Length: 161
Image 1 (tube, rainbow, N blue to C red):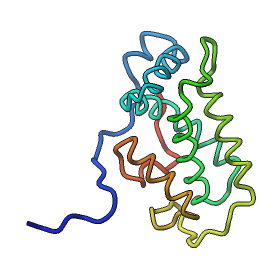
Image 2: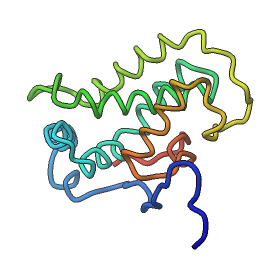
Image 3: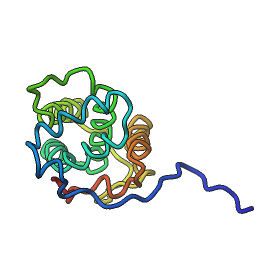
Image 4: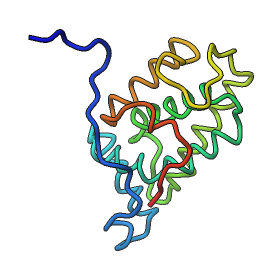
């Protein structure tokens, strides 16, 4: 029997959604709000859908605030981990979900300034390039929640429905 791999085991998943039936049939804001209750009850499929629909806007918000790509990737991951944990706490019937997520991202970006010096100046981070242990935990937790490898999650050219 071959030795087991070290580190997290992550499944490959299909590329991000660029369109979906729910967004064609209804208001995107209503669709995103409808995902929050299932997410608050631990529905990872709903979380993946929310992530796929909002990640480009959220990453753009973070990249406006932070210049360091490792720091930006860590804040991006930590933002979505916070969304996972707080999904049932702050979402009302009229809430702008993207705005709510962006406020989390803006707060986390402000907390990072100035970002601790990173060990690598690569344009996109790898797991070993995380700024510190807290950032690494956020990156690993997001990859676990989504069931996707880190690298595609940290790129800015991400689709939005």
